Image (cartoon, rainbow over all chains, first blue to last red; front, side, top):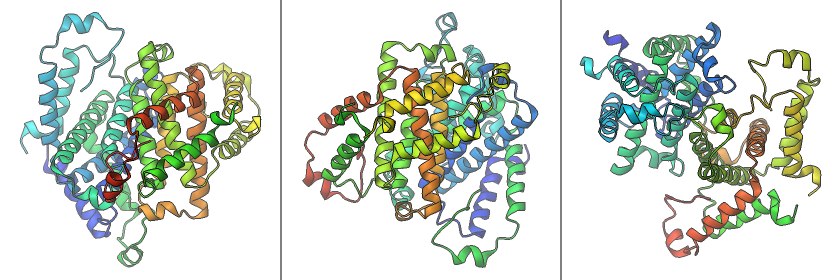
Length: 123
Length: 123
Length: 123
Length: 123
């Protein structure tokens, strides 16, 4: 992965972008958390009337629109983490470790037996 | 940035995690987009009664909880992009280029003159 | 419908409730819109891993929890409309009239022909 | 309040509206919960860059747009409750009773002393 491709490079670009426009005053954690929620819902909107199957084979136009919404979510997520001085990937690794500890063994028998429902198939 | 720290490594870990538990069947794009929205709202919840100023200086406990929610958003975002076979960082770079084209010049005078409001200070 | 049951009665109760606790200062439209979004997501959470079919036949415990989340959404919606001095039911009637004008004729043939998808089956 | 104005009348209109278009198949609780979340976020979007003060004095154009989003939330909320056969206002009354029991006394001294923050000023 090139430096350009990394999350840190993205974070730095967004930081400059906001600074050049004097937007830091509007980029409060509260406002950025709202923007992140709004973008997540714009993503959700593309899926709201689709069946599970349809959601897995999007037409090219919807797929491009969805990719743009995914990007928007990542931009606000990166910007919010920066403003709060939180390291996103480090936080994700901490969280994954917690998740894996709490569901240590895959318990394949139990989990796989009940393929009809999934109360907690959470990351 | 070590390989371990990268988004690609995170994506691969989540992919294995889901495969080991036979969760692919539940990890449809529709369901993952819902989970992403739910996590964004859990993040939002921490800020809902705070003033802009309070949101910028969280106490240690809230900050840790917020970091965990940011992580959850990143996990579902990464997993959803993977299931859709979309390159998150590439999509973000495409989006940033579009944004910068549409607001090419920072127009500092105009933007800075009106510090009281911000209709479109969007990433 | 008794007076007690009406939306107006609910609005008045919430207004008193907030006044008695000096909460008007926190019940800004911005904060209440956030709370409404958070409650909508808590509702959504109950459905995120269910199939369409499962979502239509909830067990008794989930149904009670869902009813409580529906109530929370209504409470914040009513409170937000009150703070903005907007008549909810009047706004709903205006909106319905617009929707019905834009899709005047049910066009049963066209709509029913394509039962596999629904781009715009919106209220 | 006239019968026409009531929530029950709204529910019945939406039920006919969906039936005439054969939309019941798409109006699963899962899909309607998604639509409700999407509409709540469209409402939220109007407030995301506003200060608390600005959110309390919207210009006429924004106010009309906000009223329309409030209406959309009410439409999906009403439709979702109907599909689940849940009485919205009854659920709201149950919830309010619970809330009032848990914060029985307004505790004016304690609550009012700390006007700078509000951890739980929830309905």
